[in-house]
Amino acid sequence: MIDFKNLTIKKAGELLQKGELTSVELTTYFLKKIEQENPKLNALLEVFDDAVLQAQKADERIKKGEKNELLGIPYVVKDNFLFKGRKASSASKVLEGYVAPYDSTVATKLIEAGAVLLGRANMDEFAMGASTESSAYGVVKNPFDSERVAGGSSGGCAAALGAGLCLFAIGSDTGGSIRQPASFCGVVGYKGTYGAVSRHGVMAMASSLDHMGPFAKNAEDAKIVFKCIAGVDTYDATTIEIQQEAKTVRKIGVCQELLSKGGIDEEVIRNFNESIEKLKQNGFEIVDVTLPHIHYSIPVYYIIVPAEVSSNMARYDGVKFGQKVEGDTLTADYFKTRGALIGKEVQRRILIGTYVLSSGYYDSYYGKATQIRELIKQDFRNVFTQVDIIAMPSTANPAFKIGEKTNDPIAMYLEDVFTSPANLAQIPAIAVPSGKTSQLLPLSIQFLSAHTEDYTLLEFADSFEKLS
Amino acid sequence: MITKEEVKKLTTLARLDVSPESLDSLVEELGAIIKYVGKINSALAEEVVQEPLPKNILRQDIVVNQTGEYTSSLLACAPASEDGFVKVKKIM
Image 1 (cartoon, chains in turn green, purple):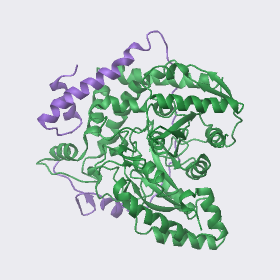
Image 2 (cartoon, helix red, strand yellow):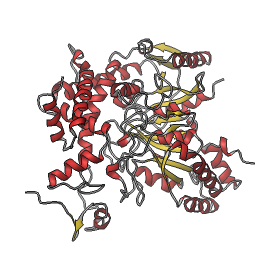
Image 3 (tube, chains in turn yellow, orange):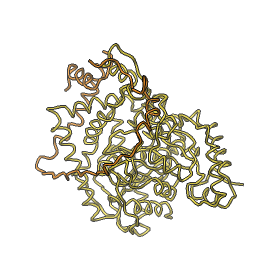
Image 4 (cartoon, chains in turn cyan, blue):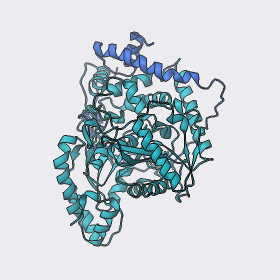
């Protein structure tokens, strides 16, 4: 009897290679689970009707003796990735019905690897949000408590994996959009070095902060997926090589100042301290470190992001693709299309971006923000001369209730307090499940490593999971 | 903080049609956000920041696509097209 519920990519891969399980059986199992669970979760916007066909092709490849860790493994992808011939909408009305005319680089790699794409996952519109409450297709419910959010913006991915509807998921992380929902849904979420994974064919939100990455049940699985999707790409000039060898980790930095600022849930602090204690008892040296400019992360983030968003969203004008609302003139077409079909949060960010980039304001907002960003990068570089890994909570609170933060944009922005620094500094960061609250909601610890030290971080996260 | 006129100007620049009710709530929300991000004004009083110069990554200047290779699949995405062109209302 196969224990489907507790399968991982590694375990399933072994069973597939040994012939004890077929990809068709595995895919059929997940499709049934999706049919049962997705209506209440709203994690997936579409289930692809060729999933079993993909699985059949994977089984043929396995029979021919092909070995690949992701061959035949079912997954879901966030709705902002382009897969040729499939719909992709960034959960926005302005892209309703849009069919991708080409494959993103991530798609190309996963198709080559033979993974089975089950469906596209719900998200905050254009990846702007921390709860999926801004999705044009309804909120994603947390699999641990349906009155709570699954997090965002990759909430659909996290909820699908957390509810056991797939073996991994692919999301995007600009300020925490992989790590925060991973933390709310009890799964691993990995954001690598900026440029480790190509952004070609993924709808851009804030181009200097967007990172593509995996959700998985454990760090070992996350590493398997990351290895497949990472790589320099001629279609994305910001891609870079990363270190291929993992370094030994001895010292872990904790920024006590950050943790004593207040606004962090008591159970999160207690759980974090327990994890640190466990690391100490297993021989790791814990070092107090300072990140002098980190408290500027959120204001800096919410200047740079809207600025880049306002530029990236200009393409949604009803001319070359997407939906259109007709006006009397061409200019009216733009106003009406964008006004009616782009959601409130996205509009807010476009307007803030327009403001901070306008003449007279550019230097005092955007100019200054990029300079502070450079100081934040320097803070991390300094700390990584003293320690190998930095530890902090993934989020200041476990999953919050649906509707709790929708009336206060800034309260929602503060969800990114622990996650946005790694995007600003463009360094690897991972959210790893670390326990549950007294109400059985998932808790999570976050680890960060130096620029290009992705495998050091993934190996360390794996050892953390295996600590007694 | 930010006036209604300033917000209206921003919506014009961003080509966003906004209803009068939405405009009122935007004035409030944008005001609060701009005030919040204005916290950065307390930074950098004495620090000199050397931002690294970006560098260009170039590819070979060679033709990679055949003429017309992607025309039909790209036009299929456009809300209006005619005779191999994306169609829009008159510009002038």
